[in-house]
Structures are given as C-alpha cells and as structure tokens.
Length: 245
Length: 287
Image: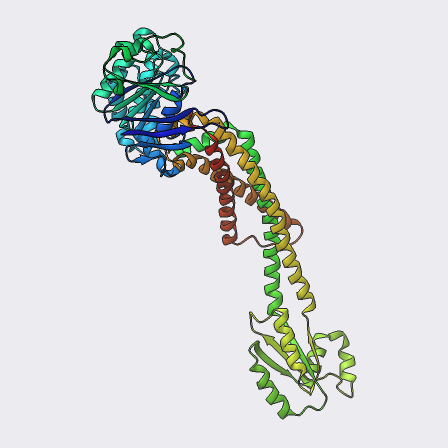
C-alpha cells in the first residue's frame, strides 16, 4: 500500500535528508517510525503525503506514484491520506465541530450530510460533549482528538501522525494512542512518527522502522520478534529520544 | 455560500486596500468612460453630419439637355450614390434668391444668370467616408462638361480624426490606469491569501482542490472589479449630467457600452486576483 523504493531526498545542496530508503507498509498495518531528531521521520511522512517529491527513487501510495503524479491529482491522494500534527493546527476561531465540518465543506461533502457526519466523527473520538468548544477551551488531548476526527473526515485509507502525543501528558497519550489503535483495527493503516521510547516498548507487537541520519537502520519486520534486535530507541539507548526536526 | 462569505471577509479584513483597488479600477475605467462619452457624442454628431454630406458637380455653360440626362442616369448608377438631383441654372438662381433674401434685389436686376447648372449628389449611408467621397468626386471630375466638383469633407475629416484621437487616448490612458489597478488588486489578494494562509494550508492538507481554494479570492476580485466599474459609471454619469446642464447637450452612453464596461471591470478584477492567487498559493507549503 505504501512503498518506498530507493528514495533519496535532498534539500538544497546540503546532505540528503533521506538516502536510499526502501520499505513497504501493508494495508491495515500499524507502524512506528522512530529515530533521533533530524533522522528524517517527518520527511518520510511528507513524502507519503506528497508534500515533497523524492529526488531519486519512487514513493507509491495505493494507486498513486510519485513518478507520475500531477498537481491536480494531489487532492485526491490527500483525501485518502489523513495527517495528524503534533501541534494540532486547528482553526482557532472555529469550534471543534466547525473545524471538522470545515474539512467536509472544502472537500465537497453535500451540505445535508455534513452535520450528521460531524456528529459521528466527534462520537468516534469521544468528543460529542465538547463539540461547541473552541480549541483554546480544550485540553491538549481533546484538541488532538479533534485533529484526528478532522483527519478521518475524508475516510482515509492511511493515517499519518507526526509525533501526535509529543505535547500530551501520560494519560492523554494513552487515550489518544488507544484511539489510533481503534482506528487501525477498523482497517485504516497508521504510520506514526514518534520518539516516545516508552510507547514503543509498551507495544512490542507493532512494527518499528527506525531512521538515523536519513537511512533506515532498523526494521522490526526484517528482524523478527527477537527482543535484542529492537531498535535503539525502543531499547532506550541514550541520544535516541530527541524530538524530530 | 462559503465562497461568498470568505470573499467578503477578505474585503472586510483589509478595507483600505480593497477601497484603494476599487478606486484604482474606478479611476481607470472613469478615464475610459469619459473618452467613451466623448467618442459616442462625436459619433452621434457624425451621423447627423454625414447624412447631409453632398457632392456638388458644377456644369460648364451650354451643356446640352441630352448630355445632362445621360450623365444623370450614369451617375445614379454609381455604387456609392443614393440620389442625383439636377439643378438647372434657373433653379440655381431661384434657390439662391430664396435662401439669400438680403441679395434678392441683386438677383432680380441681373441681366445674365451667372450661376451654373449642377448635379447635387447624395451618397448612400455607409458610403460617406472620406475615401468614398473622394472617389465619387474624381469620377465626376472626369466628365468633360463638369467644371468643378465641391464637397464639404474637410471638416468632416477633422471630426473623424478627433474621434480617432479620443478612442486612442481612452485606450492608452485607461490601459495604463488599468495596469495600476491590476497591481493593486494583486497586492490586496496577496494580503488576503497571507491572512488566510493557515486555513489554506489545512485545505491543502485535507485535499481541497486548487480551484476550490482559489474561488473566494476570484470572487473577491470580481466584487472589487465590479465595485470599480460602478464607481466609474457613477463618475461618468456625474460628468455627463453637469456638462449636459451647463455647457452643451450630450447623449448618455448606450446600454451595450455600459454593460461591456462593467464586464470589463469584473474581468479586470478576476484576472488580477487570479494571477496573484495562483502564485501565492503555490508558495504556501502544507506546513
């Protein structure tokens, strides 16, 4: 479903942000993307979302290929790939419900279907009671749930999450993470960039792809279930738990 | 609905800049409007003048009636000619004494009629341009018995020239003002895009199409353009009324011209906004 084939991505003339990265994420899979700050986690997510195109190699997402992608096809891809940010990025002057409705409106959902769908999405993330609250009236965990509801509005086949629990306390992190698990259980693939070693350790069954200096240094699918071969982040090796750039 | 709300929000967010854009379009079209008003009234005057344009061919003394009759039907057959009237020497004297009453004594005392016979030739509508008249005059001068050909085209030519100058000046001045207006609308739209860059980035993230994102800005351009057009129309109307009441009687612009002017204004707004928004949206990175 998501395929990276020898992907290299340069920014300007500096060293490449990614070098010869290859991996495959299957339909319905949950993947942790981890690594130290500046390892290239966000670059991978942006390549999947086709905000960036590879300098070399190919990124495939479902039927879309970075080699053949035209600008006018990008909206169609983005509707199938939800994106959750660490810092939420909600529209501050709109309520939780309006933030979700906004996405439905601008992706062409018929007016009559918006309200019931917003209710369903907010129900899915457990926020019906806070539908009329502005973002500043919500806790971090609640804001992140609105962002997830917003990302789910277009019924994506894959959900990308860039450090989604980075700004949350332990309790909120657990709640948001459970939500991702539930969404994944319903068949949506999830690729979550995180440097939260504890979160990764607590979920050993989830595949881990680790990046370092733009290269894949570890993929738990290739290493099987051997606990000794868990990634450096998962094993808590010092220097491998910074926030991504 | 959202498009319209967002478009008016853009105008409300930067009222001064939007006002400036409307004024700039308004002024550029007002210049065009003024020249259009002038050109239209010259046109009207020309139609009146042209219908009276006649070519007069004076005949030599002693031209026989047969020659006059044959030539008369020949001239009537010219493609530019609507009507030929033969004015005999007697008729010429009669007409002169009737039109110039103060000289009636002089005319009645004459022993010899000094006035020549002539053909008064009216041209068909559409064949009254300086070139047409010149051509007919040359053919008439070709007849041996025609002594002289006269036609009052010179000053009509001058009016024509004035008409062309008015048109050219309208285009040149209006065009340069319009360029300024396009730049101003571009700045206004760019500011509106920047003010909404967060919203636009979210739209791009969730898969809104470029055309959906652009639409409110195009509508903003349309509203600004139309506003400018209406301002220009109002100003031109004011000038028309004040000149009509004080200096000379003027006719108001035809409806078609007004409609075309408003369409032009709206187009100006849309094109300027389209240019600016296309460039700006591509600059916004999806976070």
